Length: 508
Image (cartoon, rainbow, N blue to C red; front, side, top):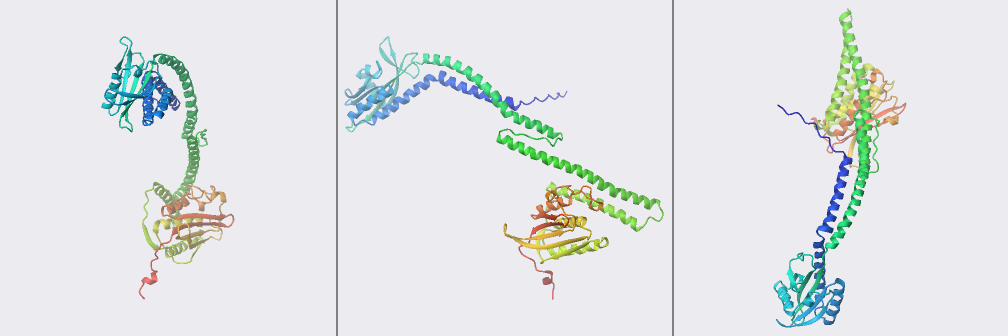
């Protein structure tokens, strides 16, 4: 049998995760304090005393050649560090001359040590490169100091004896012996234990309270954003995101507010697209069906005029579908640019001649003007597609004089140092309000939703122009004046090297 799918374990919320992390941090701090103040207190104390005695020996050894200064330094170091000091000049294997002696610790080991013991310390330092650190415990039964390992005093005071051999200016060895006592810390540990327990209880309570407050304060704006995101996911595009007092969360909320606004706009455009497309598709389909039925059922109606209506409406459907396919390809990012060098001026002139022949029967006239012949290196078919789209738009919205003006100009752009070609298409229509100029390049956007039949379409033409010009590395723009008309512009860099004109290629 196949095992049943186990239900997914719900993830822990950010509030309780933060609480757990802060509580764990407080626990780690408590453990570190307990280890330092209880478990390793003796070792830490012994390490500090050892470091102090070594530092004191180093300070004294610098005054080895100044007998008077050595005594003063020994007195100062002894009082400051609470150590016993004995300084001897070793004259032979059996004799030594005392240079300084300070007895800061009662019954210290070095001042109760015989000369043979002193020479034993000297021999140990000599064998160890001039330095020796030893630990002793006083045995009350034998009244002697017994050598032990560090930390093995069994509750008795532990003496640390540090021996250093330094040569003076006479060539004799000078033996510096420093003795410090490490007192038992058992009583101190018991005191610290009691204090640590009380402090730990207070700290844990405060840490838990702080963890609850901080986790709640940090997680609240995230929880609010999550709830708002859920509302946005079900289509409530007027949802607002609040970020609170944290910069990162505030930036996230601003981004999500922008996303919500964009989604709301896209949804509005989608609804408008469905309404417009449904209307624009239904009308030609109804016309095609109606005229086809008339031609079938009524004798004498099967004529060229009715057939032309069907052809025109079919072309309108084809245009709608092609616009949708074009915008889909451009937005997919799979379009390739096949650049070639061609005469833009001659290409536009031929295109305008074809337009004028096609539009003469409808009374439209397209006037083409060009300052000079210009070559460009770009994708010819895509550039012409963008150009024809703005020409078609001008024909759709031009005024009663049915005049459209196409003008080609060039200019030098100081920002990039290149020469640009600008193609301007001007109509004499009603114009576009200034607040709508930035919206006309959006997908599915139409200035007048109650547009006349001649202006029907998907609202994709100008969006296609915008995307094509970006793909080709060009630019597009518009300027308009209410009651006067609009001018749409596309711009493309001119070719750096101009090909010879057709007349130069032809033989004389």
